[in-house]
Image (cartoon, rainbow, N blue to C red; front, side, top):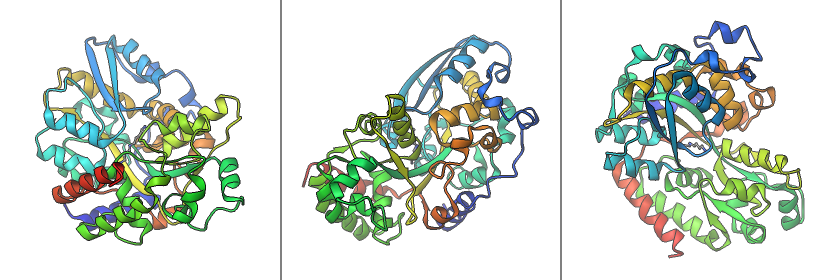
Length: 388
Ligand code: SPD
């Protein structure tokens, strides 16, 4: 893989080149369409089953229900919260799943391991709705876009409980580089009392630390990873939990005051806090010093039992109305470019979902790593968590 090209393609994506793709005329002419029934988006009835294995909080359950009803398909869902968990299952095989959604950093090696079957694009009429830049980018991990169909893209960032953070810091002024809150002992020593959470995933966490240190976030130099681990070791005892999804409810309940997480999931925490009466108020940050950017794609496991239904479901999610409804729910940027205009304005204009130019300028893609780097990251990560 040409990493330089991949980085450039990501720059194009995050620098806002995603517009101008094919649009769905029906959706275009109806700005409120996302909030209407999605039944007209699903097509004719067919039957059978569909076994989805997807990130937690990554689809509006109402859209899954509408799809199942319309097609007479019995949809079952199971959830994961890290690429590590998904990859272990995919590389073992015989998972029984029809559709999964790995991130770009993991797609290439899973394809090479023979874990997936080719997509039949003739069964996905909505394929043309995908932002072309996403496909260009994915082609670097999946040459010819044969196996992976983009679903959402988003950022790895952090969220705070401003009231608790101001109290702990003794000021409502945040550090110039907001990542100091989680990586600088001067801040973590004060914030540990209200609760700091890190990702429970070396794939997501290391690039953030490397970027904070001014190093290549996708470095292949082992010494950089040793240094990043040493930095995290200094703040390890201030970290309350390692979590890749549990931080959502913990933040919403006020049991954590700073969490590193997936941008959309942090927004879900904020929404849950509001829905619970607003006692806890959260703010999702998008630090100017940069965030990690990724794309997740639907892929069909080699031994999937319901291949036709998997194609039907992918096609369904690429309908801009459905994509917008899912986008409003999961608060990530949909792969179907036209969906943004159909999303609720508060989400379509949210910089933690569609980052600003200033944030984009310093952001980076979470790219594939070599087998050696993956092994080293895993070892360093296990030691860190064990306090070694
Ligand atoms: N709850 C949905 C989380 C989706 C996160 N995908 C992130 C991939 C980062 N590499």
